[in-house]
Image (tube, rainbow over all chains, first blue to last red; front, side, top):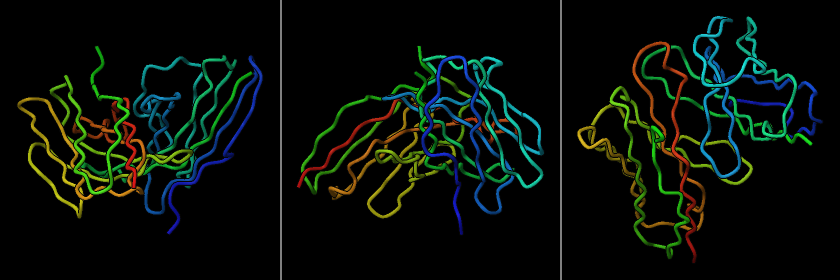
Length: 113
Length: 114
C-alpha cells in the first residue's frame, strides 16, 4: 500500500521563477494538505484541498496556489520565487472524517538561488 | 507568541534512558494532539494520535494530554539509538475545515547514544 508520494525530491530554481510540486495521496485518502518546513522549524500549513477545492488556507501570499485533480492528486505552484521560499515542502493526506490522522510524504527540497 | 511552544533542545541521552518531550499551547480550540518523528531528509512519521485529555500508550511510547494546563507530553521508555530524530508535536481543532490544518511545535532534536 503506497504512502504519500511527492515529486521531485529536489529542485533548484532562480529568484523570480515559478515552480510546480506534485503529490499523490495515500490510497483511500481524498484530502490533501501542503506544508512548508524551513530549516530547524516545524511545518507551517499552506492550504488544504478537498473535492478539488481549496477548503482552508494558512498565512501564505497568493503567490502560493494549488490544484487537486479528480484522482485526488494535487499540485502546489509557487510564482515569483523569493530566496525565503527555500524550504522542504511537505504534502499530507487524510480521509475526510473527524478522526483521520494526517500522513506525510518525504517532501520536495526547494532551493532558490 | 506562538500558538504551540516546544523546547528545541537538543536533547542527548544514553541508551535505555526515559525521555520526556513536552509542548505547551495557547489555543483552547485544539482537540486533537499528535506526535510525529522526523528523520533527517524524511517527512514526519505519525507516532501517537490522541483526542482530548488523557493518556495513550503504544509500546515504548506514552502520550499524555492535559487540556486544563494546555500541556502535552511524549514519554519514550528504554530509548534506543534508532530513536534519534526530531520529534514534533502537532495539534488541531475539531470540525471539517480543520481536518488538514495542523499547528506544529518547533521540534525537539533527540540523540540517543549507545
